[in-house]
Each structure stands twice: as C-alpha cells, then as structure tokens.
Amino acid sequence: MNKETKIIYSFVILALLLVGAFIFLWSLKTSQMNRVKLRSNDNQERFVTSDINTTDADGVSRNFSDLRGKVWLISHVFTRCPGQCAGVCAVIDELRKEVNDSELLHLVSVTLDPSHDDASQLKAFSQKHGLVSNDWWFLTGNPDELNSYMLDTFSLSAQEKNEEQRSGPDDLFAHRPMVALVDHELKIRGWYDPFDERGNKSLRKNLFSVINEMKSSPGS
Image 1 (cartoon, one colour):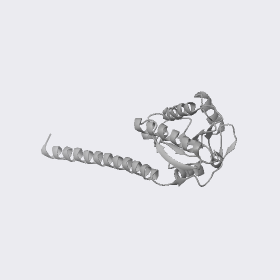
Image 2 (cartoon, rainbow, N blue to C red):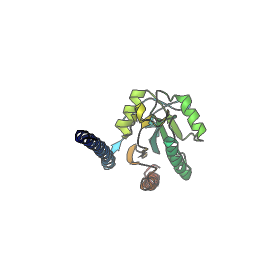
Image 3 (cartoon, rainbow, N blue to C red):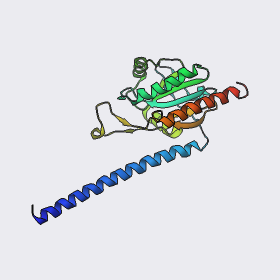
Image 4 (cartoon, rainbow, N blue to C red):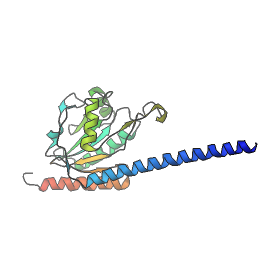
C-alpha cells in the first residue's frame, strides 16, 4: 500500500467515525429532548378538553368525555406489533386486576395503525391476549385525525420506520411504550414507561393515589 492510498484510507475512516459520532449525538439529544418534554408536561396542568370520534373493537362509537368520573390509563397499541404492545397491555392488565373495580378504573388502548387496525383486527387482538373486558376500550378511527389527536392531547406519538430500519415485516413503528394516567376530572396526571422499574413503580403508586383522591372527592 503506497503513501497516497494510506492517506485516502485514513480520511475515509475518519469520515466514518465523524458520521457515527454525529448520529450517536443526534440520537442522544433527541432522546433527552423527549424525556425533558415528558417531564415538563408532568409539571403542567393538562386536561382532555376535546373529543374525537373513535370506534371500539365491537364497532361501538366511543368518546373520551364519557370517561369523566373514572380514572383511566391510555396507551398506544397496534395489532401487528412484534411484542412490545402486548407487553404494555400485560402490565396495565395486572393493575386493572389489582384495582378490580370497573367503576374506578378504565383502560384505553388506541391503535397507532388505524389504516390496518379496524374493529375486527382489534377484537382479534384483544381475544388473542385475553383482554376482552367492558372496562377496556381498544379504539380505532380516522388515521390522520386519530394520530394527530393522540399527539396533541396525550403527547403519545409514533414514527413509521423505513424498510431498512425494520427488523422484520411487522416491525413497522418506532414509539416509546408510554402510558398516560388521566384522573376523574379528565386531568392528565403523568406519563410512565411500564418497562422501566422506576416508571412502573411510579405508575402503580400514582394510580392508587389518584383513585383514593377520587374516592374522597365530594359526590363520590
């Protein structure tokens, strides 16, 4: 290998290292921004102030305003999810069973893939995972409207992956497995990662705290 070739190789390697460092720092910054956003939202009073037309797994029209008077947990799901979505559902299902009172707690799973997930797909998903219950809505709706609503109202979003980013045919979306806690007055009380040990403990603690608040509130 002559001197000129060595110099070229050195520049190529340096360029690759710089590109790799840039990608790493950009990813780290994006992750930190997302965490800051969620933390800042925790410190603000945010309410579910608008509604949207949705349809549940039985084809029944549902409105979030109908959940006033109950504590509820809302998260994303999609029926072709390789596994993460079922994991989130399993965590909140355990909480539902622990509360064991449909008058106190309601669960809401909203598809982030409404173009594919119609009522029948959601029904099959809930049956497959043993999640069929009157106090658990699996919802779909207009794709653009529903995804925008979930972002604007609950700060829950997803990004469709490019083909080269997918680990398999069903690895369609990049999204954080967040669960939002909403109280009986439609106030959003926090966002939690159910797979994170601290996040899971905080979710459970705050859920029961909010339920106790509701029980002790006037008119309960």
